[in-house]
Structures are given as C-alpha cells and as structure tokens.
Image 1: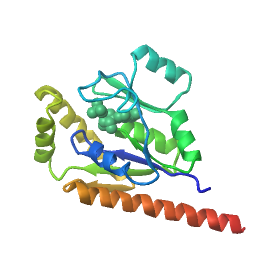
Image 2: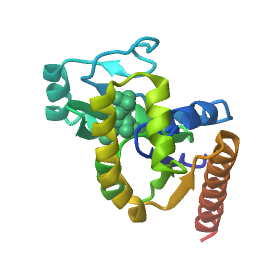
Image 3: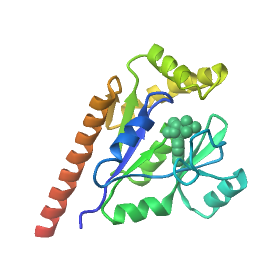
Image 4: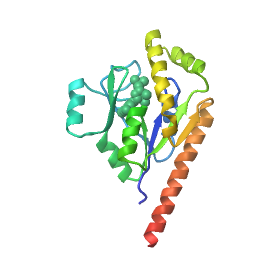
Length: 197
Ligand code: 5GP
C-alpha cells in the first residue's frame, strides 16, 4: 500500500484556513489531525472533534512522555499535535493534514522533511482584519494581537512549499486538492520505481 502523505496548512488567524480544511476532509482519503490545546473551548466547538481540550499539566505530561509531534505557544495558550494518531493514519495510507501555526510547522518539517507545507494568505490585511472582526470570536485587542503575529508568520512564507491566496474559497480548495493529488502521484511513481529495482 502507498504510504500516506503529510500536509501542513498554516496561515494567519482569520485567513480562512479552517474553512479550507473543512472542505478538504469532505474528499476521499483526506483526514485532519486533531490537536490538543490548553485554550478554552469556544461556542460551537466540540471536545475531541475541534480540539482535545486539556489542562496545562496534562499538556506538559504529554510533552514529557514524547506524545507530541510538535507543540507551540500561541496567543498565551499551548497547541500541539498528538503523534500517535498521525503516525497511524500515515501508515494506513491516508493523506493527513496538520492545520498548525508556523513555529510548529517548521518543527514538523525538521522531523519529517517529506511533509508538504502550504501557507494560506488573505488577499489583503484589510480583508484579514474584516474577517476577524466579522467572525466575532476575538475582541479588538485580541484581533490586533493576531494581526501582529501575522507579521512574523508572513516572514515565514518563503520556507513553505506553496503559498495560496484565499480570495475565493472554492479556488483555494481546488488548488490545495491539486497539490495533494500531485503529491500522491509523485509518491506512487517513486514507490513503483523503487519496487522495480
Ligand atoms: P485557534 O485558537 O484560532 O483555534 O488557533 C490558533 C492557532 O493555533 C492557529 O494558527 C492554528 O492553526 C494553530 N494551531 C492549532 N493546532 C495547533 C497545533 O497542534 N500545533 C501548532 N503548532 N499550532 C496549532
């Protein structure tokens, strides 16, 4: 069986990467890794689906037991990717998506250089601010904090394999699917050639 591929999707908060990922998992053989976080659950979020909501102590225990593929602090909270589930899905030949911020993304790339990194950007900063305000999750000071973090995140763009503009959701999803399909094709060809040696 062809080994699954790992995709990292990052982008500033409010860029719409969560919505892109929701669309991607509707397609065959694409799965999203569920992260653990110490941040509070928001209205509409489901424990074990959106995130695993855990305490700082539990988070630290997971790090100490080497259960995290990567983790990072973001806006005063910890976020991390539980390792076991990702490894299991890859072994099963699935396409796995990590929707994570840039510090964690770079740590994954160090450990797993074959991971394909996709950075999603908004068409403009005005649009980014408008989207954050419209979704109404963060107050004004939190929005400014996230815009400030975006400055550093944009500087990490060149380290990604692909940069996609999320101007139109459908186009952005289509472009991401093309990257996933091309990566799968490449993997299949390499495995075939290796099996012929
Ligand atoms: P939010 O609080 O808006 O759900 O997420 C804040 C940021 O944390 C987003 O950029 C999201 O991609 C990132 N994030 C979510 N899960 C993880 C994770 O497991 N690891 C890392 N490094 N970042 C994560």
